[in-house]
Length: 424
Image (cartoon, rainbow, N blue to C red):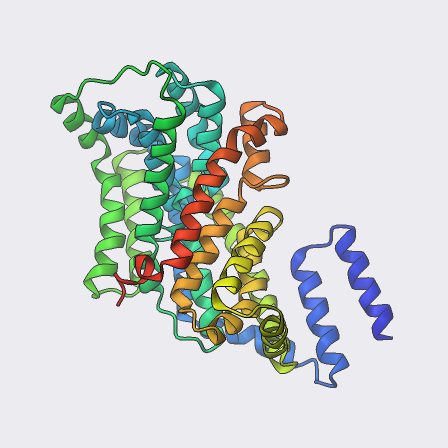
C-alpha cells in the first residue's frame, strides 16, 4: 500500500502538482507508515500560528508591492545618478545600489529586473558600457538585496530555525547580512571597472543643486531604510513593530504624499500581495509538518552520521554545502529551498559547530547566486523575456559575475567573523 501511495505522490510531482500538496502527501504517508494518527497534521499546522514573527511577513510584502506599483524605481535611479555619476564606474555602482535597494524594499528579485531593467540597461549602454555587460549586470543585480533588511528570506530562515528550537534572532540575521551584501556590491563594481576598462565612459559632473533636488524628490522613500535599520539597531522595536510601521509609512507616502498609488488600486495590490503571502505560508505550514516527521524519524541524525562518515572536516563540509546550495538555488525557488532544506542541514551544521546565523547568511547568499545560475536560474528566464534575448546570451553575460560572487561567498563561508562580528 505504501509503495502505491508513494508512486501516486511521485506521479503527481512529475505532472506538476502544487508543491504544498506533494510535501503534505509525503508527510501524511510518512506518519501513516509510522503508525501515527493523522490528526497530527492539523495540530502541527496550527502550531505555525503561535509564531509572532509571521505578522511581519504580510506587512513587509504589502509594503513591497505598494512600492513596486509606484514610481520609486525612477526616483531611485535619478538620485543615484546625481550622487554617484562622477565616480569611475559610477553607472555600474548606481545600477547595483538601485537594484539592491529596490529588491530590499520589494522582496522580489524578478520584480526588480522588470521594474528597473527598462531604465538601467539603456542608461548603461548610453554611458558607454557594452550591451552584454549591461544586460548581465542588471540580471545579476536583481537579487542583490536579499541579504539586506527587511529581507523576507532571512525572516523565513529565522522562523524555520525557531520551529526547530534553535535560538535565532531575526534582528541578528538582518545585521549579519549587511557587510556580506556590501562586499558583493563592491566586488561587482570592481569587476565592472576591470571588464569595461577599454570602454570610453564619460563621467557625470557632480552638481550639489541636482543632488539636493533629487534627494528632495526621494526624501520620503529614503526614510524607509532609516525606519528599518534604526528600529533594528536601537533595540526599541521588535521585527513585527518595524513591519507595521513600515507598511503604514509606505501606505501614507505612496497614496497621500506622492499619489503614485490610487485608493482604488489598493484592493488589487493587497490581493496580489496576500496571494504571495498565502502561498508562502501554505508551503511553510506543510513543510514544518514534514520537518517534524523527519525529526521523529531521526533523519537529521542519520544525515549527520552519513556526512560525518564521508566528510572528515568542517571545511570540507562547508565547501560541499556551498556547491549543493548553489545547485539547489538554480532549480528551486528560494522560499521552497529554505523551507525544505534548512531542517535537514541546520542540525548537521550545528554538529560541525557552525553558528546558525552564519549558516543563514551562507544559505541566502548561495540562493541569490542561484537565481542566475545556468541552466534554470529564475532570473535568467525573466531577463530573457524582459530584454528579448536568448537564454544562452544571458548565460554568457552572467557567468563571469557569478564567479565573482562565488568567490565572495567562499570568503563569507571561511571567514565567519566577517558575518558575525556586528552581532557579537
